[in-house]
Every structure is written in structure tokens, then in C-alpha cells.
Length: 151
Image (cartoon, rainbow, N blue to C red; front, side):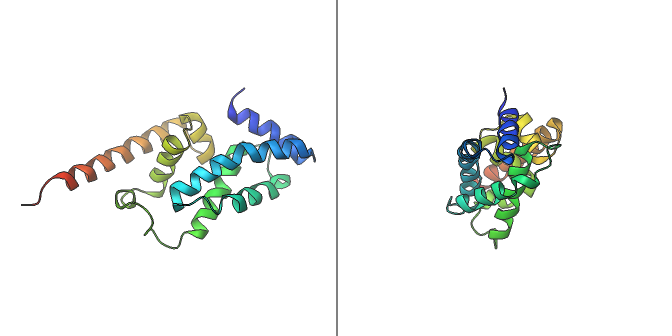
């Protein structure tokens, strides 16, 4: 069973009031939310609050969309709310689009597969691959420009 299917089943069971399923779901999504917070904000301090927000919204979760998408959407929304500027981002990342940063964080920091990243972002596998490729190309360009001595 994939992580996506496992989280969907846990979410369904937890939404019906199973406290054990809710605890297992919190244990499963908490570390991912923490990684996203560290990658985007430089700290995981807001992770517990964001996790609570995700789980409070559980009864409203539409079973038609994967729970992973709901987790990522709420986490991204909360991070955008917390973030007041891009000053905390490493300079090279400020050159990327938000979509490119999201893909890189999920693929490299959270170790999500292309399929998991696509589900989390509500995109196709192909779109995730293209965004990742463009982001890496942009980062390489910035790295080369920084390593080239000025004349």
C-alpha cells in the first residue's frame, strides 16, 4: 500500500472518530509538515499548529481528493500566511517560481516520489518533472554565475 493510500484510509477512519487512527495520522503527517516548515521557513516551530489545523479540517475533507493533497494545501496556505517576506530564503531560491520551490522541497527535502508530489500539488506527473527540471536548470545557472569571477 502506498503512502497516499495509507493516509487516505487513516483519514477516513479518523474522520469517523477513531482516536487511534487520528494519532497514527498525526504521527505520519507531522514529520512531513515539519520538513516543509524547515524548508520554507527555516524552523519547524509552526509545524504542530499546522498539523492541528490539518487534522481539525479532517471532517470537512472531501474523500474525492487524496488526503495528501489536503495536507499539502493547508500546510502551504499556513506557510504563506506566516511568511512575511522572502528574506529567509537562500538567494538562489528566490529566483524560482513558487511552484518550482514547492516541487524541489517535496522531492528533495520530503523525499516524495514524482507521483506523491503530483498528488500533493494537484498536478500531473509530467508537470512535476518539468517544474523540477526547470528549477534545477535555474539553480545551475545561478550557481555558475556566482562561481564565475567578475571582470
